[in-house]
Image 1 (cartoon, one colour):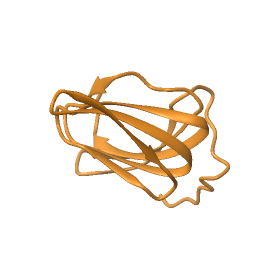
Image 2 (spheres, rainbow, N blue to C red; image 1 turned 90 degrees about the horizontal axis):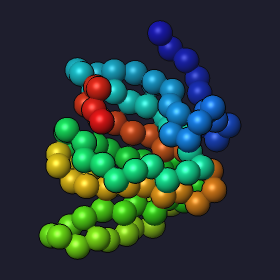
Image 3 (cartoon, helix red, strand yellow; image 1 turned 30 degrees about the horizontal axis):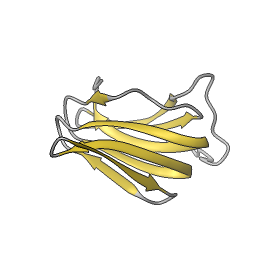
Image 4 (cartoon, rainbow, N blue to C red; image 1 turned 90 degrees about the vertical axis):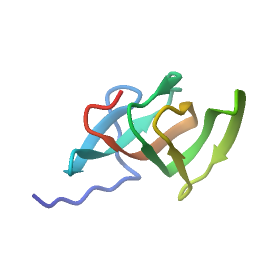
Length: 104
């Protein structure tokens, strides 16, 4: 199946609602829309997080210290398996997330 998706206009009914773009070898590619922070979490595999629209502060823990990275469109955050992190958008944001299927 092929489709075209205008990422700048994509919205969801709730914060972090997503549209499945596709699956490759047990990995999902999803477009998320949000206007609210997520929750601190640890994925059960690596995760790629690409900001497509808006700004997002990615909070993460490194060597026991909490850190924050401001992300702009086109920037990528890579979380290794076991890395604690949480995303806080400024207003609306659209984010492409690539992660193991059925990951937390």
